[in-house]
Length: 333
Image (cartoon, rainbow, N blue to C red):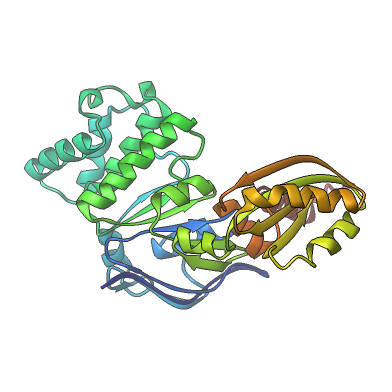
């Protein structure tokens, strides 16, 4: 059974299309990832599925309820952890959960029992009576996850759940999310622009770019699309001549040139490196560095979109600045 079904879902803001005719389904119990740079449409998609934004066109069902016609039913069926913190820092952890549970109409005894359960799940029992303003960033994220679970949701939305956390804390949050999905069977929709986060957590990943899906599959199958090891060569010289040479070698399955660095996909890349260096030397090109690795989701993103995720974020920031300039009110003379 699918907990989420989306058909041609679209959201426009004026002339700008933030989400462009998405169609996908998420089976019950899956941990599904939306991977992409800031501005790709991930949060807008989540907001439509969570009934916080009305779609321009298309349809979506969450837990069997239409997100437009059955908004209250959808909201009772989901939990959500927003990208921006939404806790009351003056309240204790338990008080934050108590307030949220009351909003869902839970009785006193049910609230007490459930709060104890979710505090234990995220390992905050000993900090339950501490004011949230004294929590670390990781503790706050864990408390927000606990709050999203307080009413037994079928679907949990996590919008950039580890944004701004250090690497060690981020890894701890991953473990909590993985355990929650595995042990409790909660369907989780995760948005992230951290490649390693999507790779570690998600059963399937949709690579999102400019409001649509560039690719959708398991992380392993997405990486298999590249077909082997990735050898990166940082070079100087007649790059065009070298690129032409590479394209004559049938054992190079894919070749991408990006800012003076060739990313070459091949089988047994470790044995091919000397030959690659020799080809470069014959073309009059200097090889400054060589790197061999297995394909990553960063390589997949580059393959499907033509840019790294960081470049997409930079171009989105440029578009945002341009929009601000266009819409900035003019001062009267």
